[in-house]
Amino acid sequence: MLDFVKLLPHIREMVAEQAHLRPQLDQAAGAAHKALLEIAGNDWKALSDRIRSLPVSHLMASFCEPPDTQHPSPERQGSHTVIAADGSQIPADRHEIAFCYVINVGTVFFPYGSEDRVRLESHPSLYFHDEEMLEEFDGEIQPVTPRRIASRRLQAECRALIHLLEEAAARDAPAVALVDGTIILWSLEAESAAMRHEVLSEFEALLNRAKELRIPVAGYISRPGSSDVINTLRAWSCGLEKAPCKLKCSSGRAALPDAACRNLQNITDLSLFSRALNDGHRSAVFGSQSKILSQLDRSNRITFFYLDTGKETARVEIPAWVAEDEELTDRVHSVILDQVRKGLGYPRALIEAHEQAVVRGAERTAFFQFVQRELLMQRIPVISTRKAVSKRSRSV
Image 1 (cartoon, rainbow, N blue to C red):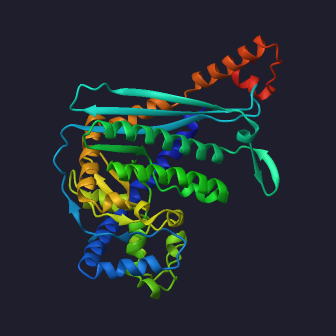
Image 2 (tube, rainbow, N blue to C red; image 1 turned 30 degrees about the vertical axis):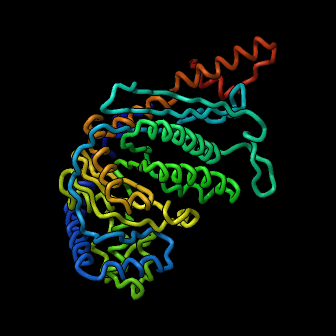
Image 3 (cartoon, helix red, strand yellow; image 1 turned 90 degrees about the horizontal axis):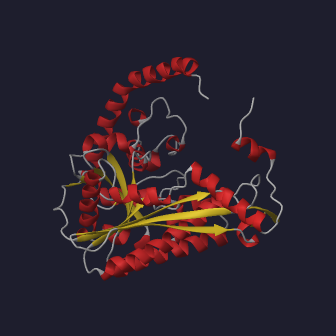
């Protein structure tokens, strides 16, 4: 229970600090935009090649087109299909009456411009076998981790989207597949090599099938916190290979006192593009240097652009094969703008997919009540720890 009387002074301190920093952030965003324009006026292709060869650990964006490019909003799509999938889970809890977990994938199928029915569905799966609940780490068998459950959820989302792709293709109308959040699977870098290969194989199967059907897959990131483009601008300001800090400041270290990039500190790509983009326009396409992408076919490596939706500036991620096809990229652009209008600020398909996927507290409680009932019917002793019981009952 929060004591707001005690918390209020800290809230006021935080707001005062943000108000103090705002003019500095505006100035930094202006300097970043100026740097972007200067790069566009030079040999940006050669610069992009140099960026790809730099031995740095932090993310920097490469350029797929002149970095100051702005693409206006394309014409709205006529008859088209929007599909989306999102996932949630009931995590494994050793304190509960059964050691298991549930993955729930929500899917939507929106056929616009036809009399076909809209479909909103959820697809739950229960995992309880030993091979699903245990994993090996450093030669020891341990309970499944939240990271592993998240990887399996990603696999389930990929399989659901492949089914939706086939159905959308059967309509013989342009289609777009939307994913909530990033499609750069950086979280897999912490997985075992075997699990990483397994998940990436399913993800690449999704992208390959989408490519065959000419249905672009796009990840929509609201209020992005990434700084790939800003990191590139900072490195360019300091001379790339000649930078006194050897480009270490973008990885979290403070810039040197006389560093040329000091005026670009403490801002993100959002700070830049929320000021640089006109309403409804998208930025140039940039390439990501995330290490996990090197394990994908070149055509499936993820690129991104920023989009002013009229409500916010979002980051949109698409495979390279989509970025290289102007018609498909325009389709993603147009459909997302339309979905944001329909969703009053957020893509409607993603809102509905989330609603189908999310497992709320009452549903989690009901799930374990169902398990308990079935155990009792089979005369199996029901055992839960006192911690689990205490969460469900209160006393003084």
